[in-house]
Length: 506
Image (spheres, helix red, strand yellow):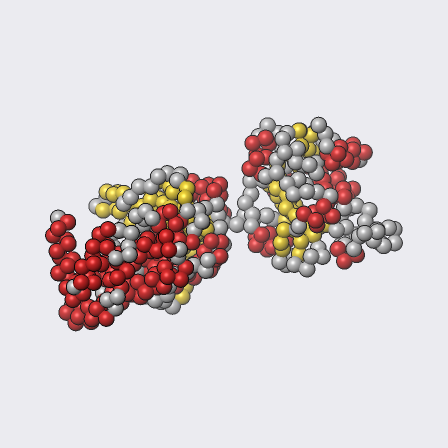
């Protein structure tokens, strides 16, 4: 059945001698649904977006090839019309005579004859909304559409698609008489790979090599290398790669630590999703297209990926996930999960919305960041593919005995405890306290590896804050509750308790 709106468009085309073919189908309010039906239609299909400026007195119709992914910020750069926002349904009906889900250049037939021969607006038309040419709408078209032989649009109703030639489109636009402009529509990166690098001259190239050898087009992802005050050739290596690859961006800063380097990368990222890669590690070849598709299709707050250790040429999987599983971040907190930040890919909007950043100036920053992120995530998807390769680095700070590690773990214990008490529902606090208990365990076990003076100082600090042992008794893990009970009973016997428990486990 031909709708009134479709009939009006077809009549207009016929009256002006523009050849067309109309294909009827069920209502297709989204591109995802439309793509299934458009497979049988020989034409270039388009996305059509309708915007208003920040003052609300100018309206813009933007048309580009349907497979392109484009964010509002990228459009703002291309259109150079200031800050944009999607126009309301009321504006869409007023300016184009359309409803959401059926936006189309054919709606411009309702943007004609708005002034008389003297330029006086017709009744009900506000002069403030009109461009100098007497139209309410300015049209922007993707330059790539100039190469399309045939182009398809909804005829102001999403129950049909009408195909016209490129020449027919130009004739239609000249009859409309409004202002239109061909623009270079650049897709925003979907993925931003954030790579902090400090004195990484021995392994940075291997890391970048793995990020470059991918199956995702270069314009769909970016690599942001943050040189964190390196004193070796790290910056020179990064700059050389930046010169040869347009999707590599280098940021150089004074040494501020891993947390601040990652935060700088988040701030600079233009991708919809963010992946952290340590410069001494790497990712497997040809893995990004699959990850990008999962992110694009499902839009999770977090995408979980699998990792492996690389030792003497062997790849040893660290853990497995249930591929395709979707659940809330809170549900994942209830499981035994990996706190290492590079094992998760984060939606940037989710990080921004929840003001999630890494705490500056501490070691073990992932232990503080990741539990908070997962608790706040509404949805997370698991991918069981091996993506991230962890290389052995014995000199790594978090693998080297260092008293600062102990003090920082105590800070993290305090921050996670405050988070649990102020922001976490009571039902989920035991799972945050499990993460707290892991930090307590790491802090106590560090004692034996420290020189006597540092060991005594850290021991005194732990004993001074011994109330943290009570938190272990609230952990969801039975082993933590047992440890907490014993530590509360005998707080001066920390090492003895752990030695005893270790012997019992073996």
